[in-house]
Every structure is written in C-alpha cells, then in structure tokens.
Amino acid sequence: MKTTMGTAKQSPIDWTKTSWHNFTALQQPKWPDREVYDKVLANLSRLPPLVFAGEIRELKAMLAKAVVGDAFLLQGGDCSEDFSQVTAPKIRETLKVLLQMAVILTYAGGKPVIKLGRIAGQFAKPRSADTEMVNGVELSSYRGDMVNSPDPIMEARIPDPNRILQGYNMAASTLNLLRAYTRGGFAALHRVHAWNQEFVVQSPMGRSYERLAKQISQAIQFMETIGIATDNPQINQAQFFTSHEALLLGYEEALTREDSTSGGWYDCSAHMLWIGERTRQIDGAHVEFLRGVLNPIGVKIGPDYDLENVKRLITALNPENEAGRLTLITRLGMKKVEKVLPPLLREMKKEGFNIVWSCDPMHANTYTAESGHKTRNFNDILSEITCFFETHWAEGTIPGGIHLEMTGDNVTECTGGARNIVDAELANNYMTTCDPRLNAEQSLEVAFQIADMIRS
Image 1 (cartoon, one colour):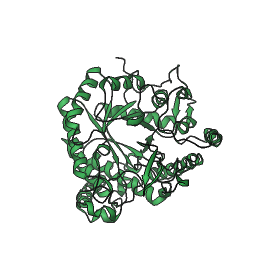
Image 2 (image 1 turned 90 degrees about the horizontal axis):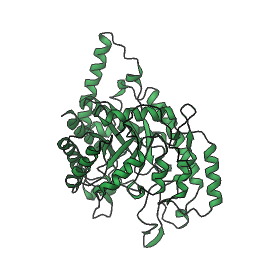
Image 3 (image 1 turned 60 degrees about the vertical axis):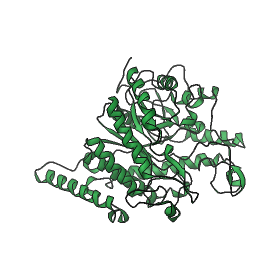
Image 4 (image 1 turned 120 degrees about the horizontal axis):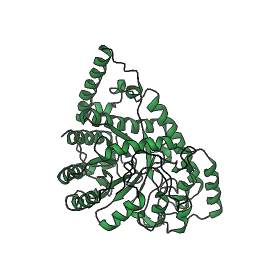
C-alpha cells in the first residue's frame, strides 16, 4: 500500500466542496426559512477563515508522529459548547486544565503531547430523535447552540440560521483568546505552579501535580544555571489546536477555502474535524465532504462496528494511507472493549493502515443515576482506558491518544474520582446542557494514570 507523509496534498479531482449535496445528509436541522439560511451561509463564506492551512499541515505532521508512538494526542473539552459560557474565565480554565494534563503526560509520561481542544466550534450535537419529552411536553430536540436553544419552550427549539453566524463569531473570539494565552506567556512552563487552581491544590491530585510542577521548575532552573537559554518558544509558548464534530455541513462548506500556496482545499473552521457514529455512512454526505478536505480527520467507532465497513471508510477518507491524516476514536464501553477492540486492531494492522488510535472512554459509559442525572463513573472511564492500552500492547499496535469530555470547572457531573463523588452529590454543581464532563480534578487524575501507562 502506498504510504505518504509530510508532503503537500491536492484534494481529489472528482470532489468539490459542494459535491456532498448529491448525497444523503443525516442529522441536519430542519431550517424553517431556507432563504435566511442560504443568506447566512453566503455571508459566512465571505468572512475570514478561523484557522489556516499551514497550521492544519503542522498538526497533521505532529499526528504522523503519534501513529508510530513518538507523540501522544490529548483531545478534550466540552461535550457541546454553550454560547453563554464563551467568556474569558471559562476559556482560560479549560485551557489551563488541558495544559496541566499535557505537562503531566509530557514530563511524567516522557512523550511529546499534541494539545487539541474540543473548542471554538463544538456548538452542534447529533441526536437520536428529532423530538424529546421535557416536563411532559414533546419539543424539538436541542441540537446545540448553533442550531437552537436548550430552553424548554417550543419557540426556543425552532432552528435559527442566525445562530450559525453567532457560532462563527463565538469561535473567532475563543480562538483569539486561545492564541493570546498560548503565545503571550500564560502557557509558559515557568507558570506550571500558577496553573493549579485553589480547589485542586487542596486535593490529592493537586498535591501530586504540585510535586511534579516543582520538579519541572527545578529542571528549568538547572538549565538556566548552566547557561542553557530558556527564553525560547518551547519553554514560553504552547502549540494548541482546535477540533469539533463536522456536523452542520453548510457551515463547514462555507468555511472551506482553497490554499493559495498548495492549491488544496482546507476546512478552515478548525484544525481537525471528526465524523460521529451517526454520520459515518460510506455513501453519506459527511464522508463525501470530509474525504476532499485536507485536514486531519477523526472517525468515531462504536462497539457495533462492521470490519469491512471500517476498511471502506479508511480507504475513502485516506486513499494514500497518509500518516497523520486519520484518527480512529474508539468509543466501546468498559464492558465491551476487551472483546471488540482486538479484532479491530488486528484487521487494521494486517491491512497496514497508518492510524492514530485514540480512546474515547466517555460516550459508551453513560448511565442515568437515581436522581435522574445522566452521568459517568470515573472507574468505568479508567477501566476502558486501561483496557485500551493493554489491548494495544498485546496486539503490537500503538495507543496514540485520548479523547475526553471535560471542563476546567469544579462540576459534579461524573461520579467517583479522588473525591469519590456519589450519585446524591450530582445535583451540587451539575452544569452541562448535554453530556456529563470530568471536572478539573478528575481530568488530572486521568492524566496521571495515562502517564504511568505511557511510561511503562
């Protein structure tokens, strides 16, 4: 099989950014006014890109290293971003925890970490049904803030195309702040102590992090003492990339631009896009659209996968077997991962596919507590991660990344962890409008556990 890596690419000649219109597009909102919708997308197509082709190529080159185990992918953020939470403190806290996790994985795990946020565009969500029951009333399903409002009233659930433009503006604001933080000193390794939040400092994970931060500070001080310059981007800045599920194809098309230097087409709404379980049909519009853009692409794989279908997907999305192009994100569940992951790994290894293997331990471990809150248990999440690593080692493949729904806030949405949150405590600070997220302390605990596995 032909293998390519790190070279300039061209989009397929039988593809255009509008060719997806000829295919069935699932999970698209029923926009009530198509004229307003078309006008919004026309305006969006004239606005500046959110990210740039050179940044996208840089991420792909880094992901190529994760294919062979020379880097590790850390992807995390909100289940579904909330317009009301696009504020400087919220963005800073989420970034801070991701930076802390990356430091743990890099220093304790001994491997470069690719920092990829579920941020600046994760405003739309697939749903299992067009309607849902809320307080005994049937309403149109909430599909994310870029489509409608979670407010439990009929008018709020009507899809509004103007929210697409609002989502673009929110993403632009978020990216502006992320670039300022990661390049303006906030992400400097000299600040590893300052990243620790008060409620984390007082916790077991916070104390573990503080010990690690002290070691890093001592290492930097030693470098300075012997005359090694620490005033460089590797110490004072952080590379940070963005990702979201490519769900609303009109939005993605409007932000797809031809690169002036290479001629290829890039979806400039984010550095990486992924296709979910509900939209990865080989003959569907989402696969058709994403096969032509040159971004790194992720594909979610659930426990009911079909091996031949997965192989056809890989061939369609990455026909040249380019390293760094494709990430398979397995979301199998603690109870099924041990049985269903090995045959998937064996078959893809036999085919010689270049894949970043990433574990999403969140989505298949969801249950409803007695209180009625949708939640996930920390031990189940950790069990799936551990089995993911151990299975890869047994099969001679590379566990290349982790994909988490998490937040920098001290929420009580997932049970367990160092503080052992129980079902009865979920209501204390249950803030999500969609799926339950790990809080900052639980996220750090996951990072320490993964670092131990990477190091071994």
